[in-house]
Length: 566
Image 1 (cartoon, rainbow, N blue to C red):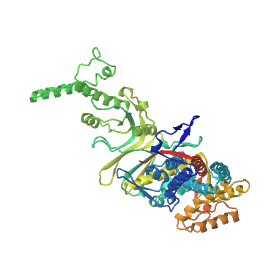
Image 2: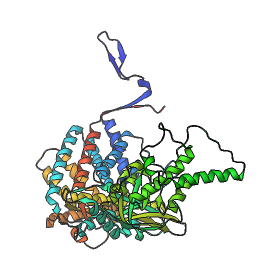
Image 3: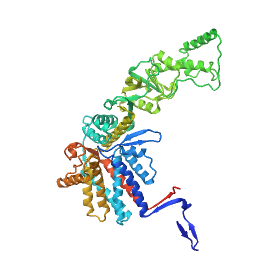
Image 4: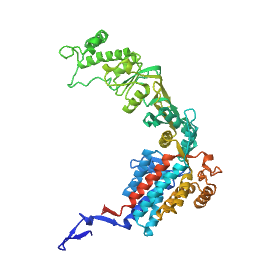
């Protein structure tokens, strides 16, 4: 119990309801925290590298996800321990900042925690361990800068970017790994389409990744435009429009709902014919009264028609107005009723309804149009332009999508993925996201290091050499932790981990060449330069810095107060 005594010797309780709480202090708390972090890292360790295993995760709703992406695995896991949640946040931070390396950063943090546990058992203070790790991480980052290489690329020479994206896709699911070359080319072309090379900036929001069940992964294509999972509102509307002028509307074509209930009783044929003739007369003289209506005509602000009659007259006006502006296609965020649909088809004005807000924004960006909230504000200058708008059918299910291609502003593209099942499409989306992020990082900073664990082995040698100049065991423990990544690669590839690591490490020291790594794919050479296995410098540096920060935070916790399980 947490008791304290006042100056008269009377005890009092510090913690409220302490009998209902559990408490860990000192070395026990630190070991418990380290064990939780190591448990999470152990889960992801087998998913590292091109031969890493996949994980199957089932949600409470019964949805099944198969992936080896570290961030996705940890997001889907129902983690309860607070230290384990820190590891989840670590992977998420790497995903948000870099987009790749989410598995490696957790494996690195787990290795650092394991080495820290050995040092704590020797009686070394956790603050000393944290300080040594911080110093070693600075040495590591500086050495990465030293061994990094820059490469030049251009829109006409995208091979270096493609090779780096292929390295990222190599560690994904086997189905994605099989098609890594075409997927890497698609990713690089998509990023270069939206990139601002002068400012070295890429807006990934302009790249839309869509998937459709059916076909095979090789059918995945890059569309220089936008795809919309909709079709024309009427089956008799044209399926292909050349040189389209698009009106993008957020106002509905549906009639307004009256505030009071109305009922019309028609009991004879003569009354029905009279009503129809009256409405037809209103439609006919709309052309002459167009200016009058849109300038707000009427008597005392009131119209002379019932709501239904007024809507019929107004709808014809709207359609004529939209056509007079020059629009050849209407894309509406809301729906429209059968009468509006019939009039649109009758006046040869194709239309698409129920298009989402995000898709509307992308269409506006791609076509150079403006989103119009009211019909009265529609002008020829606000129309979007596209070279071709076509409706495409898939398979035998009559599933249709709309392609908007050859847009006025080509800086909005779509990667359209095909696959045999939903899980494959979702995993391909995650893999392409990582490849897009890698290409973006290379445009921001075109420095690379070589993969296959070669960078970690080289840094381990450099940190171990620096440990001779600085007192303490923590720096040398950091060097041992760096070896865990190439060991995991060798282990997941079916190689002897210790023997393979020792051979590659001695080869690096002997030839003073930081490009030797683990030959995971049995190519026959350990030189990662010959295998074209690249990783981004900023991604590797971010892994080291984030893992070190989280481990320091965990080591500085010496008291854990949590509610009891009872």
